[in-house]
Amino acid sequence: MQPFRYHVFACDQRKPDGMPCCHGSNAAAVIDALRKEVASRGLVDQVQVTVAGSMGLCARGPNWVVYPEGIWYSGVTLADVPEIVSEHFQKGQPVARLMNTDVAQVKAEIADNRNRMQAALKARDAAGVLPDDFSELVRGFQSSRIVLSAIELDLFTAVATLGENATAPGVAEAVAGDAHGIEILLNALAALNLLSKQVGVFANTPMSERYLCAGAPDDARQALKHNLSLWTSWSTLTERVKTGRVAAYQEMNSRSDAWTVPFIAAMHRNAASRAPIVARAVGTQGVRRLLDVGGGSGAYSIAFARQSAELSADIFDLASVVPIARAHVAEAGLSDRIFACTGDLREDKFGTGYDLVLLSAICHMLGPSENQNLLLRAFNALAPGGRVAIQDHVMSDDGTAPRAGALFAINMLVGTPKGGTFSKSQYEEWLLTAGFTKVAHVALPGPNDLVIGYKA
Image (cartoon, rainbow, N blue to C red; front, side):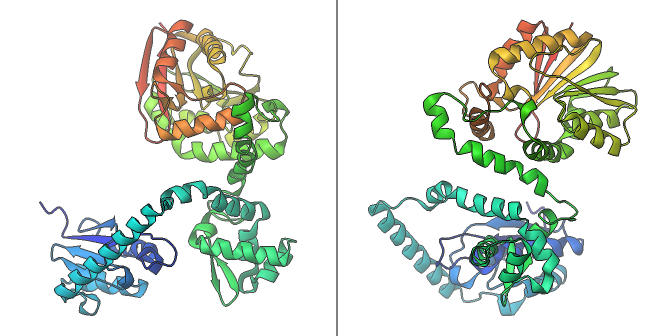
């Protein structure tokens, strides 16, 4: 079977610093350029690109193997990509100057690299050296802190504004920082490929230019600042599991805008792409009135309203959140059908006569008894034949899978008194106890699923 005319296996193997590898030879950028070149020439149905592990010619990278001919290319640069696509993939003429044609030499080099790598791994294992992936896991906080500090200082905006004058002293002056510290931080950001550096001048990379600068089309700075709050709470994990108490816990309605605004921005950014998926999965047939409990920015109510012109929605949230929701609803041009009202989802009544109650990313904030009470009030708010849709992490019965949900349970452990992630069987028990007669589990792409309860 040959569904594609050409199949490119492109190595992007990452090895420890100081060891030759394709990733260290700019393979990721070359692969990205290949995909863009293939797309721009209308060849996506003829050329398949697959990222591969080590091919054994580590010192010659980046390395590609192109089938069906089995052509081995080495030392492919950004400048070579258009030529390979044009000559090889369009005209059927491989680029000879980049080909490895001495089969015996290639096999010998691969064998030599493999033997040296196996010997090095054996020596490391005998010495009790920690595996690289585990060491990287333990040190993961370092890269995170570098990026968060850069966002907090708005370094990427400063670099964009300064342009050719974006030297370390220039950036330090722009952000009122220490020149020595700023230079070290900028160098680290360059090492993480979020900045580039040429002759002492820094510039944003496509990633930081798109997401991390003021005025960028997909500016994510405000949403990412929520991670600054998470940094503080996650630092208390040891204390939390020892004492059973959340360190310096604040009720949501007493938190300042410094916490609330980034939090809602982060939730809105996540919901902007996910809300239409949820709206389609839940459906709007027979839904004229929607109650969006803890609706945050209003992204889900907006998605449901856009799906059905007959639907109106009430967003139920705290006083500090309601103005944010109203602003998003107004921007969407739906203020005549979506309304925001103030209340506490943990204790207030929701009214009556709703066809659908949505609980998106709500249940994980509460404990089991609180969720039981929440679902009872949701049941009472529904008209006969209505339903409640819960979008959240839905765990295995032993609580270990999916991985994203198990990690998110830690976030709730350090941030809430009783919150966590719950299993399908727990949701089903709560729903049936509240009076719902039927429960359905709907798998969704991404970390969250739907659990839907139906009222007779």
